[in-house]
Image (cartoon, rainbow, N blue to C red; front, side, top):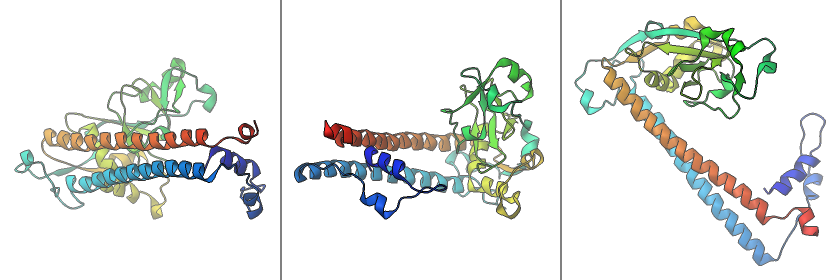
Length: 296
């Protein structure tokens, strides 16, 4: 749908509550047309881009499915002490052991929202991480809030350190996790984001993050939600997570690196997919004139 058509439908939508389009509104959509041969060329051009977009979407879905399947094999299933797939250099290593997450942490806690809420946010300063900034294994910082040093100092106990694991503990995005990187170190978090700071000689942050995002980690998170209603996790529950770990730190790192490399491929593919959609949108703006341009 061209930007001109979208604008018409948005301006014409009926209803005082949920707006909708009826048959009369659709019938009155003004259509600017050119000779048939040009129509065909425009349609063929945009259809070819649609095919490219569909192909890139399929590649993205395939990569995500590959990672999901690999996670199921690289982490032991519930009740098992060995994963289905093990790297050759560790095939003779000891069985995995499970530990309570709390025994491998230095800190489990979350921050607060400053008094006054949004009024405390500034254009630049210390990053203030909220649940919307945590996606599946990555940080989304396009809409990150910032706070000043004075506000930060009022709850400095939740200052972000390098390789802290973030876990959303309330709301619709509960159970989603990501890792702190150089962009947010020295910042802070609100009450909806839990900081898990690990004893890194015992548990690798990337390994933990990948496990939490696996079906096994998500199943544990779901188990704390009564009736499957994902409302919230408390710190006691987070500390009680059972984390299966191999005996050697090198195996944790090997698994973490393997899954992170697939994440990089997924991110690159996602960028290709989004770039094609943006390209098509821009092309449609150029191929279809606005009503004003047509009259001129």
